[in-house]
Length: 143
Image (tube, rainbow, N blue to C red):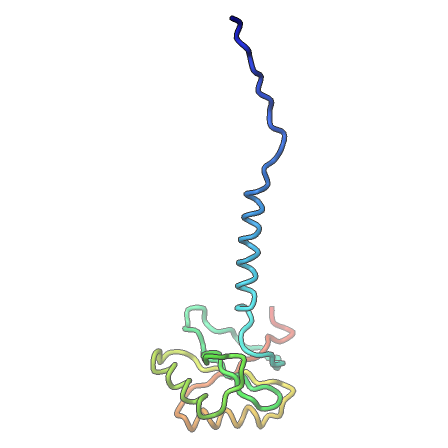
């Protein structure tokens, strides 16, 4: 009885299923992380040539003041919702009680009245918060 010899043909198709899986995972990762890259509410920051925070420093507590004088806190339970003065101070004190070395930063809208930022600074001073920084955009001459 003669043996039948089967020839195997080379497969000329590329299996793209693993590539689709990888692309979907990357898409999900980018969709989840993109909103996290934006911190706080939209305020139009003034420009100034200043140094950036040290990378090794703890995450700062950021209080934003919009053009209308509303306060927003990045460590609040709802960072995109306005917060009143008393809960703002309580939340900042609680965050500083957990980690005393966290810097406190103020983001003030450059188109809003200067009084908004000054009122917030006075509020922070009355709450015995000793050191406060101001957040700005890098100036035109910055590298």
